[in-house]
Length: 88
Image (cartoon, rainbow, N blue to C red; front, side, top):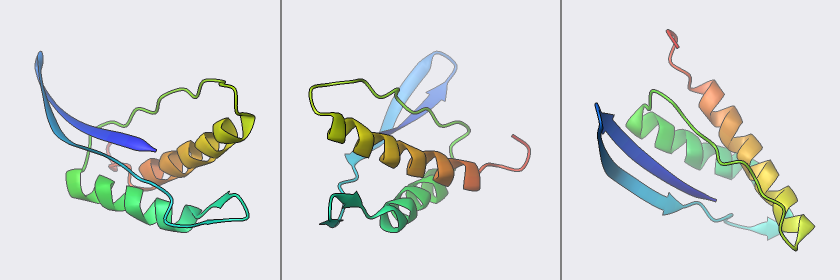
């Protein structure tokens, strides 16, 4: 799963950081969601974003890949909602 941190100031955009969060281990085709959750939460705590956007998954040839991406997006949503700023 990839991510990007973008700073917006008016109509100006600045890329602060981007990267990929690969699963550390895959056991029996399961994503290690607690570790992914911790890594995503760490990124959110570091940058304290005002908003988070998630790309809509698209259907490709491999249904299993799409399902795994959906799980990863669910983890990202949970991390973002758990770190939501109180006045948002």
